[in-house]
Length: 154
Image (cartoon, rainbow, N blue to C red):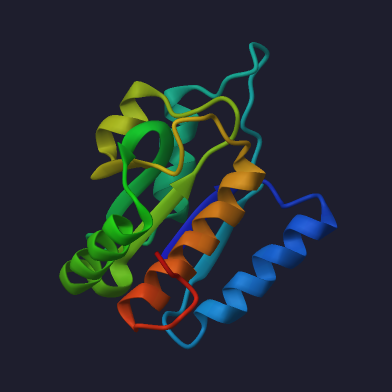
């Protein structure tokens, strides 16, 4: 499984929490984190679709990876629904499941069109730094649901 996100996690407290969940996920899945640190914004503050596409293609292990963009306009799922979705997609794509978290500029329509799926962590807009943590926690929660671990209780 791969997660691609833009920039580094600047607040040390958030970086520490990301590490906590990555360690908790280790027994269930190996996750490759790719931090994109390229020049993204032009003078208008938004990346061109071409820049996005180049960054995306360069950093995505595309051996027919199932690419999932995270955006507030995507499909919302409960934690149990997300766990079922994850189980189904891991069965179909295995290690070739890739989540992409972009910055405040969002995804261009062209970038969205190239993705296989768009999901939402919340109907609210989350900063990309918070979205990273929420994704990692929800991945951990999903795996604990799938393994009947007591972390998640309804």
